[in-house]
Image 1 (cartoon, rainbow over the protein chains, first blue to last red):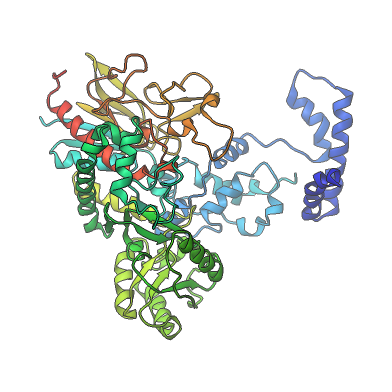
Image 2 (cartoon, rainbow over the protein chains, first blue to last red):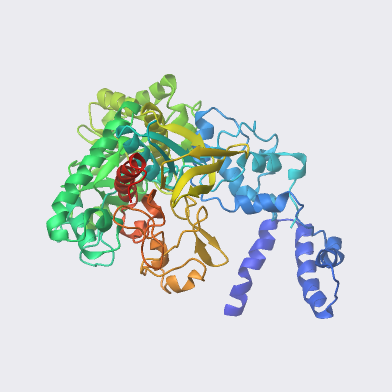
Length: 157
Length: 460
């Protein structure tokens, strides 16, 4: 029983993802990952190795701009000072700055599951009034732009 | 030429140091990057909120068994914890010093209250009696001083409560908060009181999906009028003579005026609850009021991240910071006060498992006085979550004048460098709840010594 309990989160995740394509992707990458690690393919370039193994499954590397932003957003302490400053200066972002940063911290993960695609269109005005208030020095306007821009479209896994 | 002191840090320690320097007639410049932990507060200024490590004296102990007030807790902290910044600035002998310490704390709190009052933020309280304030979850906080709109919500005095919730605003359900409040009161040994929930329905034009947007909207008179009207209509539901406890959303810059207007209209005491972490409306108001007070006091305010201090002849001569566009700016200084905080403020940071002070690489010691810079800090963390972790009391060691000291022989790093607030080692603000109290007191003390050092550059 306890053996299966360990997998509950895994299956819950698959169910939450909701689409058969995602399910197939998860099972395929999950199963193949084991085989690939057994086959012990080697390459001097770990990035090339990753791509050779996983690009066909639709798993991609976070691009150069995405990873530092996700790391920066991951410093968020969720204090909400950005939201207060934004509200006071009359900003009208499609997504509240705190929510945007919390979503941005998962840029490399599965934004679709957060159900935010519809709300992210447009981005904020990038007035950057919120940024001096952030105790974690997160570039909030850039996170917003990343979420709202064309390349902000969520990766699938 | 008047003496120039540069204060580094955007929290209460830096602000109180800069305000004190302005009072001393010194040319004060405050350089800060972000507001730091001060702006994350739930609305109280705890001078000595709790005594850590003592079961009987914990702040949650029933009041009837241990009716300690702020002055008592301050005396115990000074007498028990020799490394505590309070012990450092007030002297260690609690019996002879505690009364004098309380008097000096009252003076600096009164000075801060006077500086903030013109900018719409009240600071009320006393070291001689406890205030019992509910937060937005219904949890009761015992405290000595409180900022602004929550000040009127002292549950030690007010018999009956009308707990206001705003329909649509994300919050704990009122019945959950009220049940929690009743349990908290019982744990504190207070008699149960009638409390009822009042739900206000505001017009859809108000942004009810976000507390931040609602608070900003209520700065507009026409939006606030809607809230006042809804509250007025709910008077029969609330009953007469009750304390109305609102969530902390009654405006940002105009919260005090809004509160006064509500009191008049409802003919009853009205207060906000304290904020529930992580909502920081009270901290944000404090930050705004501090900025206004600093500007009014004539402190030069600069935004940027300090990268280094220039020294010469055994003293620090200038502060170099990167401004908003990344250009280095150099400020001449006859003395420097570092009030850069700890891990939230950026005064300490983790690097490779060790802790370092990023501007000068000052020696960092943990709560036991052991060095944690340059070696893994794991030894300063205990296994159990609720243990006292020496790492959480880490900071720079200092002498009685709050000058950072070198690790080896405890001599000052420089005669004109001072430290204040959370950057100082020897206390864990999460455990003794002295964060803003230490910031305020050490800010003032460091500023006075810095002013002396700046005026007499050649004194030892």
